Length: 280
Image 1 (cartoon, rainbow, N blue to C red):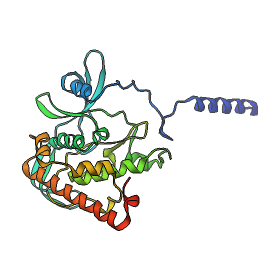
Image 2: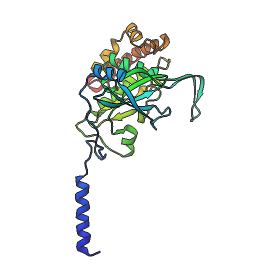
Image 3: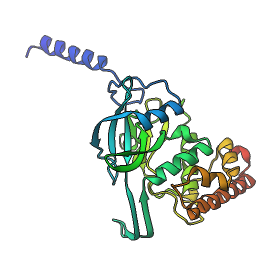
Image 4: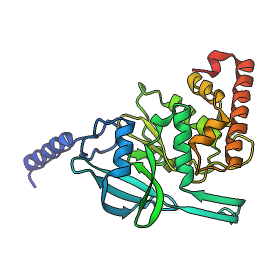
């Protein structure tokens, strides 16, 4: 091919690439998506409970592969995740050889986690979740988050959050909540990142273990003042009320014991390092 033709082809390619739309997430291609409805929590809740289910497919994420359902109320069409896992075992052995006694993996914990997140002011970091029946199965139905990648993908692609985003603060809130509900499966694919670099926590089906200890306590190095105040103010009767039908009395007691441990943990950190180093 003549040099002039090669040059013209190269210029055309550069212009085509430059014209391709990109995401707010640095380094990630953007797919056109319908605008999210400007709804509050009550409207989303009503939609999830009452909208007609018109489509379904299995997802490939996670061990339990929840359903991805399409719902419509005749005006708005949106997707939701439907989790039905409800597994109870006296003994469960994992792929790495570790064993857990009295193993539980249940959609009920998704519902409980969302209710507790509302009590401590973190429901904005979790998709609205309700209980619903579909095809003779009862499960947790969650508003589908319009995310672009999960934390595992972000790390694999070496994509850094923009400096203007308070990324670490979000991570610290998530770690404190993980400790409160004793989630044993807070893996990187359960942390979603939306186009505005907001973190979303999903999948708590393996939370609410009974031990009165803090999972990954070494990672609890900073705390949100408002979050810690709300955790400290948690009332056991209120926790039992909002999680009725989802948690038993021992699981509720476990939450309250870990509440006390979180309060003590951060009181000790502040005493050792000072408020400015620990709280934000």
